[in-house]
Image (cartoon, rainbow, N blue to C red; front, side, top):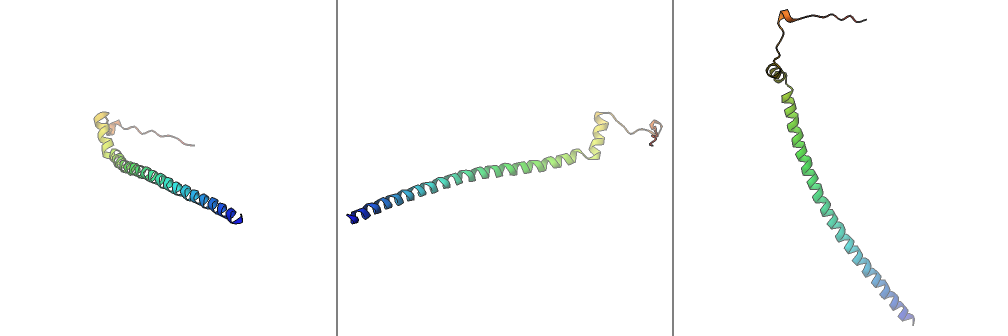
Length: 98
């Protein structure tokens, strides 16, 4: 009878080991699948970041071009009809500070 009990225990042990192997294999496949999905998302985010970096560089160049003294002066003369004052148009105002 003892031999039969060991045999039943061995069968139960092997069955539990088999189920553990199947569960572990399933978990490995699932984690690998999730890893691939996350990697695709990471690549998309990196591509978006690179596009934003390019746009940022373009905007910085455009900002530098828009803020040059020559451009500001030309826009003031053309759009606002501004001009440099003549000598007779200058007024000097003194402000006393205490």
